[in-house]
Image 1 (cartoon, helix red, strand yellow):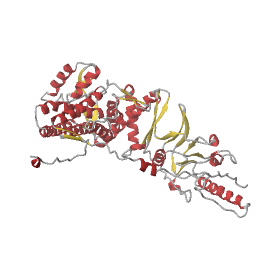
Image 2 (tube, rainbow, N blue to C red):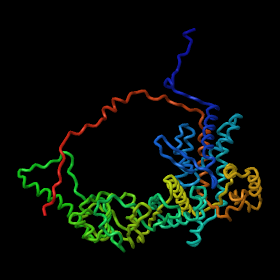
Image 3 (cartoon, rainbow, N blue to C red):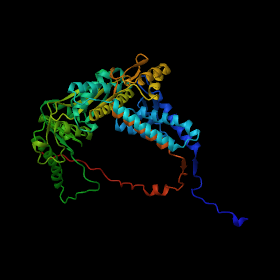
Image 4 (spheres, rainbow, N blue to C red):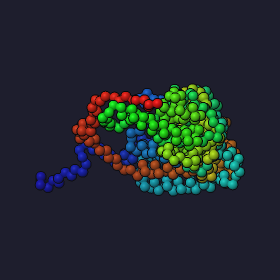
Length: 535
């Protein structure tokens, strides 16, 4: 009898956890639905905010779907798919992150009873993909093009799209103010795809209305030495020199040494060091630039009191340790080129602007370049009370900027307010309205044979329904198309999973590798004094 027993076949490592079949699929659906329930209350103009704090003590207040999904630290493998589609929606179109998560969760919630009744998941997947195709065709049919409009008409329509996005944000009370600002910023960069050409700077204090748009570049005053105050703070039509080099005395490399046979030679070495830096400063002055910016440090020799201040005596403004992003934006706006050497500086590499000035904004001082010839950049300076409020305002403006950019590129908009049942139902629930009554009225309008009711959606102000197109509740068509596509693919992906395998953690010790990677300690050595240049 023993000889007839088959040997046991072991495929997976001991301790591996596997689950499969209908129970596994239902478990994944329940996990996704639970995540969707977390975001439900944040949808729409009357959506609530979530306060999230981590173990480090940082606090985030937001109703942005992508931000919340990123901070929730979801561990369920199937539910993590919702995090991915929220990030995808945010990076692709900027808005609709909550919508895409709710749609995916609702698709799976509706599929759950069919799975329990034994319907094969591939049949459900096929049906969802067919429905997605039909829905996208309908969105394209309802879309209205903004091509062929005058500049002012186009800016007005884009402002309506931005206002629709901002209406559900923390700064929704000032949506018209910020929508105009966002449209002006996007139009300033033209056809350029680089989002970093629009800078957003945050200055605590004041109120939202104190925020302003700079048609050019603005950044906070960088670290400076005492002599900085002697420099001029305003220029008209200055030439701008952009550098990526240090303008200070550089220390020698580690363990470098110079051996002298005669002590009197020491002074000549010190003089050589100082002559090198003075030569660099002289070449900057000879270039004719009145504003010198560098990504690396500009030392105390150029700014502090040593023969007074080198640049200040020559009526030149300088700033070192400028952030690379800000330096690149100045280059794009002023028409200059960042230099890695001060040798042979030609006029073509210098930028210019109509006005350079240093201004006080709240508790910060800003360097502002306005009236730039290239004009391919803009800066929004955000004001507000609490830091958390300004952070959320920045995220809101990012969404609005993305929406306006997509509307410019795709040039078609659709009315908002909700069409697929889950969206208008949740809009009503979040606003405290009777969802059943509103949905009945909405279905009646959408079912009209003439098609004139197709643009109707939920009216958040009255608790009824209204023509969303006539009320300027507009969104780029690409937002809806991308949301339907992403939600359908996520739902189909989860429905196609029939088994989950969880491998046990590796128990191999890594202590030896960590010990072997320890760096060598440096040997003790004496410091080196800096000599002074011989006059």
